[in-house]
Amino acid sequence: MSRTPQEIFESYVYAGALTRNADALAENFTEDALFEAPLMPVGAAFPRRMVGREEIRSVMAAYYEQQVEGDRSPNLEKSGHVLHTTSDPDVFIAEIDTVFDGDGTDATVSLVQIFRLRDEKIARLRDYFAPELMS
Figure 1 (spheres, rainbow, N blue to C red):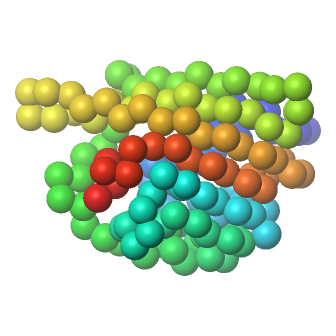
Figure 2 (cartoon, rainbow, N blue to C red; figure 1 turned 120 degrees about the vertical axis):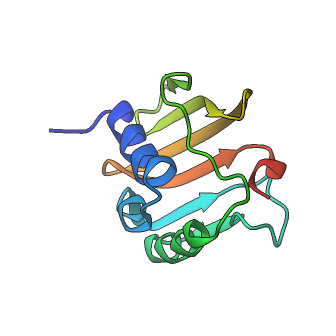
């Protein structure tokens, strides 16, 4: 049975943003996958470009181990997303608004991700978000 874009997206988000499990995250990608964050400046804490499942696994494991000042978990009840399918069944776009609870105030992070699939795995992911959010 084939996985839907929704199922693929949920698996990716659970492994990455929610559990920060680099092994599980990497398993969502093809062996030769390309993961890009084109708005990230060179040398930023969050990687700008990763090529291949194993590089995604190792780079994201190192990133997840970093302690981020003010690191907060997303509030799933307040957060939301919309998936847009395209005329190409292997391409979908995610519009995401993630809300982080704060000390009396919420912070919302909005981003767009473009997924290109092959054999129900992510072959290319372009993640567009404001770089200052990851510093």
